[in-house]
Image 1: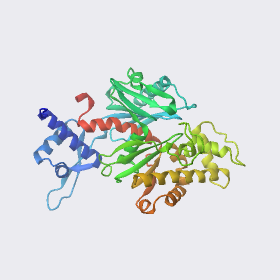
Image 2: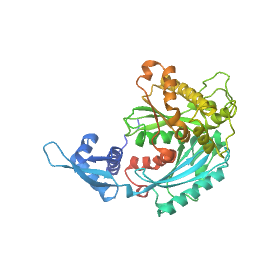
Image 3: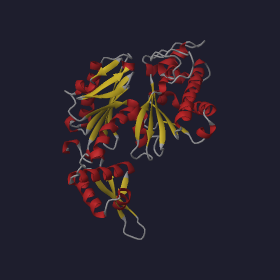
Image 4: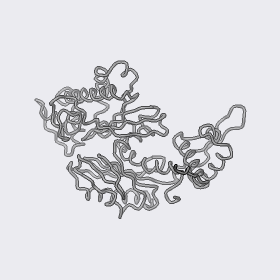
Length: 403
């Protein structure tokens, strides 16, 4: 029989700090009474922990609210200026590096455009390092003093004995040790995870997933990813990736770069949409350079009738079918369409996407569903990556240098 684990006073203190700090962080503001009710801790324990968090500069008092028949209650909030985090979006068309305060408000960002869809890991590592140096210099922030750096990659991240390995078929990466490549330039704690999962977490915390208990957050780009995000509203929400882009919607259909045929990505991914447009009778050549600019030009042409509008109509139909499959299989209460493709064409196709999903989903499941566009804008994926170091701070209730 294994001996029972012994919890020290220090363990109990950390657990209480983490619990109360997370409550304040996700709720926005909270009184000491609300913290007592939510955590089950005594008044004395709450007062001691709150005092420590205030002394450490992590939270501050901010105004008051009326109470039932008593004195106004002092409210507590997280101090945005306590620290900064960096979020990195490694995509197929760009690498974006964003600097945020630790409440995830953007300070500044920089983007490196990419012409190819096959990227050497060393080149990507250089862009990440250069981007971190640039955004911290612009804001006058010491890179070594960051609470952490989060990196979102379009692939699987597997732990190794001494770090992580990235498997990203869309980038032609297999077992890439991105952590080792960044070790010399990134001195703050480094966290690497799948980009769809981190975006799902961000939309649940700060975006269109707030208040939902079971959401699918779709990342629409050159590739198609998704995350199933679950949690009691936005607080304590977590997400896990699903390979939605490689679910087959047409038997023997268009070839997909995964090696199969008829995958959703082969119809809804940015390059697939552009290729389908080019094949339509009457389609004029697109003059812009780069996938993002070309899709934006296509969207502008689709404002009027013609081949561009037709291709967006069929894209909406395919996307609606894909969403209906999610609804029938997972029964989410919300589907959020995010990523740069959703940013470019989402407003134009959203009504048609909803109509297609309604036609193909089981009525009693679709009746409780909301389909929304992401709310985090062009920083969405970088912000999602920035949640990774924030999660670690909340899990311990202490900054990295205190551990």
